[in-house]
Structures are given as C-alpha cells and as structure tokens.
Image (cartoon, rainbow, N blue to C red; front, side, top):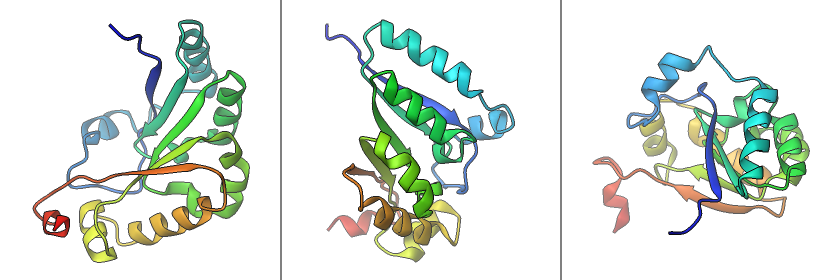
Length: 162
C-alpha cells in the first residue's frame, strides 16, 4: 500500500462565494467564526512532516482569506513542503498579495465553473466572482506557478463540454 504524503488542510471557512454545489457549506456555516491560529496549523504541519508528508493543499472556504496567509505559506515552505492552494481567486486578485505569497507556492488550483461571467457567477452566487478569478489568474501568471482547475459539472454548464 502506497504511503500517503499529501495533506489537504482546510485553513479557512470564510468565503466570498456561496456556490450552489458547495461541499463545505455546512462547515462554512458552522466554523466560519472559529478560525485556527497560525501556530496551531504550523504545529500540525511540523508533526505531519516528521511522519513523511511532503505536500499540503491549503483549501477552505477561501484559503487566501486566512488572516496570516503570507506567514503561513512562508513558514510552511521552510518546513520543506510543496504548497498547493485551492482557490476561487480570493486575495490573489491583488498583485501586492501575489508578490508576497507566490514565491512560496508551487501550484494553484482555480475553481472555474463557466466559460463566461454569467455562467460562472451563477454557480458562485457572486456577481464579482468571475472578475476576481480572471484578475487572480492574470496576476499569478507572472510567477513560476503551476496552474490547474477544478470545475464542477452541473445542469447549467455541462453543455459547454461539447
């Protein structure tokens, strides 16, 4: 049996979107006001690193809304992790935020749920979501970060698969 070396870590249950298919909706409601402290997260990461974990995916909610995101990615990188971030764009829409955080991030997985703003925003239930996402992608394309995407197929966007 292969050894597990990748950790998915929900660091924030705050989110700008209210996606119609959100798999974390119950957790967002329950835990949005109970965020972990940076040192608590780092303690867990140090322990997991000793057990052989090599990579971590910071997810949420929207992980970039975590109060000390910059400090967290910087210290996580010092622990020797490959860092992935699952995001709807969040604070990556701000170039200054990207300049601080991108040097520590290996891969960003963007949530993309439509090829145009009306379709994406319908899924996200946020009229600004598509613009935030596009700005974040544009900003991060200036850095040597691998991109991937996560798309939930629904009755509203499956016709785009053709």
